[in-house]
Amino acid sequence: LGLRPEGAFLNQIIRQASALWKGETTGSTRTVTTESGALKEAGVSTGIPVISRLNADPPELIAAAYASSFSLALSEELEAIGITEGEFVTTAALTLENQSSGWTIMKVNLNVVARLPRVTQSDFIDATIRAKTTCLVSRSLRANVTMNAKLGAEQVAGMAPLIS
Image 1 (cartoon, one colour):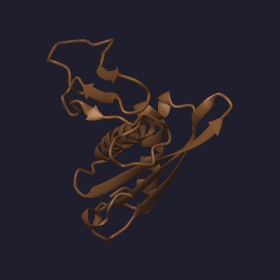
Image 2: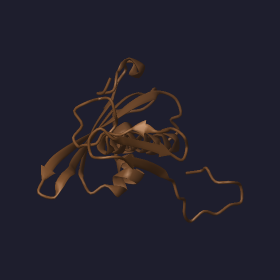
Image 3: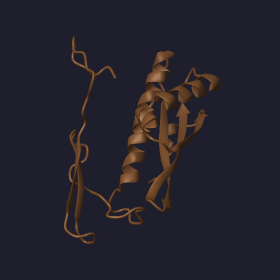
Image 4: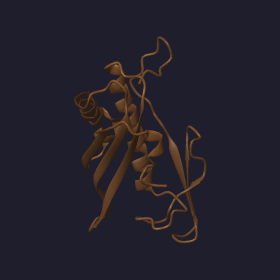
């Protein structure tokens, strides 16, 4: 994604995160740490779906990865058509179903709301569709992925994600 050292040709990148599971199923230690340090011994829920908001759970972490990955892809698509100003918020909502094999991500809805000067509704929708297709996480999930995209004049910063 343009982050390689000058003259370097990369065919593979490995990104790592580690999870510490210590103790029994309940009342034990569950943490996750990412290579970048963005998460350091962050609490992870012991069950799915999580009812408590004290710790993240794997689906929530996937939603966070999806929202950020899609946003990066959309930013690249917008830049490709000459749009470098404005703002947008992406929220990824995963739907889980308890199937016989266990909890499964069945679908994902991406909700994108943007305030982008000089962008037509048509160009914005085209860019979001291309971003959904090229997004790293979109290509990784087998779930049904739907998307809502809204281009408007309202201030994006005032719009809170679904999760507060």
